[in-house]
Length: 69
Image 1 (cartoon, helix red, strand yellow):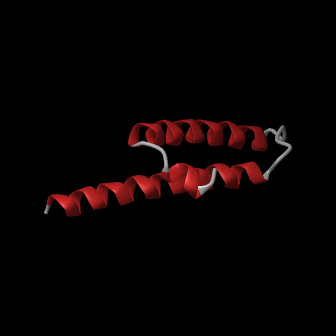
Image 2 (cartoon, helix red, strand yellow):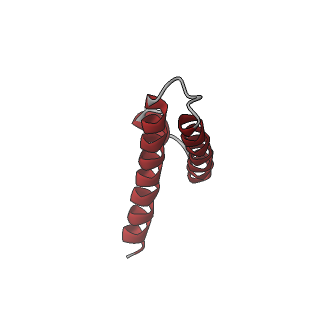
């Protein structure tokens, strides 16, 4: 998922995205260990999507804290 798409999402949508990507990553890891995965780059894609979503979430938290000061 691209950064532009992630930044347009609300906080609840980001939380849902993180949960679904973590579940997909877990399944991809299981598939890779049982040699059922055809696209090994999917693991990295899931990890990057999780990292991007967590980064945007944290940036919003920091901005909210700074605005409160």
